[in-house]
Image (cartoon, rainbow, N blue to C red; front, side, top):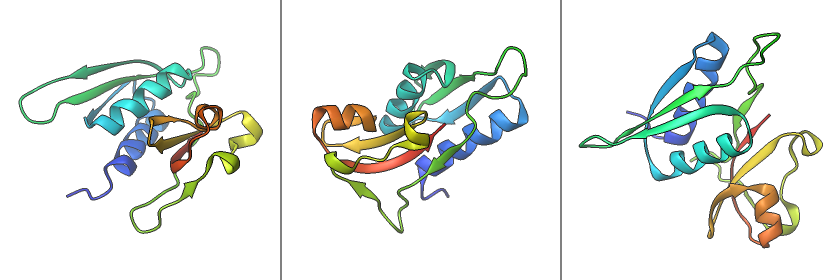
Length: 132
């Protein structure tokens, strides 16, 4: 049984991209759907599809690779706030990943968003993960 479903999501994406898979399938939840939308909007994945079945549903993610070198676009995807140690940031100290080249995904009271959006909307929250 998986206790940290977001860490499981990130691990599945990390493992599939390092193994060179084109598509990865992950059990769905609302937070995972929002993280997937952010990854697509920021250009880290090629496409995604939410499939609804009776119980939980699933997310199919088409991973993105560099056309010339065939390396995955996602170099590193790292869980920050864990169930044993939560990490929060207010709007003034939102983390900058790789000096602004990467993104931090934050769960706020206004929904799941990037740290740049959270800073612009002046809201703080739980720092879920870093992607670059």
